[in-house]
Amino acid sequence: MIRVRIEKANKYFHKVRALKNVSLSVEAGEVVLIIGPSGSGKSTLLRSINRLETLTSGDIWIDSDHLGSSTSDIRKIREEVGMVFQNFNLFPHLTVCDNITLAPVTVKNMDKTEAREIAENLLRQVDLLDKIDAWPEKLSGGQKQRVAIARALAMNPKVMLFDEPTSALDPEMIKEVLDVMLALAKDGMTMLVVSHEMGFARAAADRVVFMDEGEIIETGTPARIFESPREERTKKFLKHIL
Image (cartoon, rainbow, N blue to C red; front, side, top):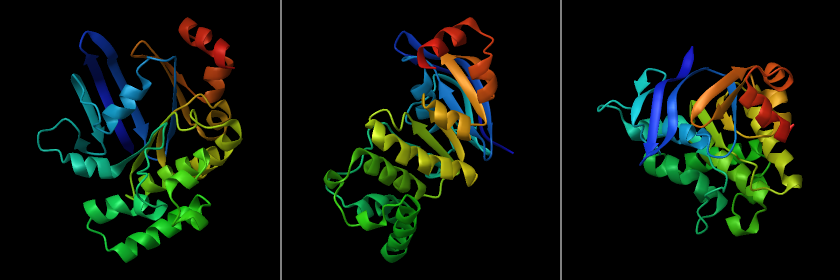
């Protein structure tokens, strides 16, 4: 079953073409790692899937929901697509619990008691139950990112998007975030991940997509892309990160 389908996506920022006829399909339960140099369109692609950016042309579907349709419910789409950013984006004036329960209570009209139970279960899942009533300023970077993942999961999304989730973390904190992501992958979550964490790629990714200058240059299994890339641009990029 195709969970995410992108066809001929183009995005301009004034005269800059950030996406160039990008087409990609992601199966339910598939983990797709997107790599490429800075400015290659990776983050723009993720943000377009979550409708944080609107395509200039092209189409995106989540299951049978067409994101560009005049009748599409953007709020419903954002419920189905969770996103985790590089810089956590936790609300500093809310506790960990309130950060996680805010959307279920305000968007889904969930009872606060039920929402807290969900928060407890998710925090247990990311090994942070003891921080449920803590303030974000008291957390390490890795803890903040795990809370951000729990917050995205609280809406019970069909797809999770990760935009360089470990790039702002100290090296010793990266593993705790990647372990949570690995567990999600093993549980069958559909994931699109922008990252250059090769260990995660080899352990969890079903497919690697290499982007450059707004285009998909090459796709394949992690083993094939990393060990025998076919395109010169891919080979040149991998020399810098492997």
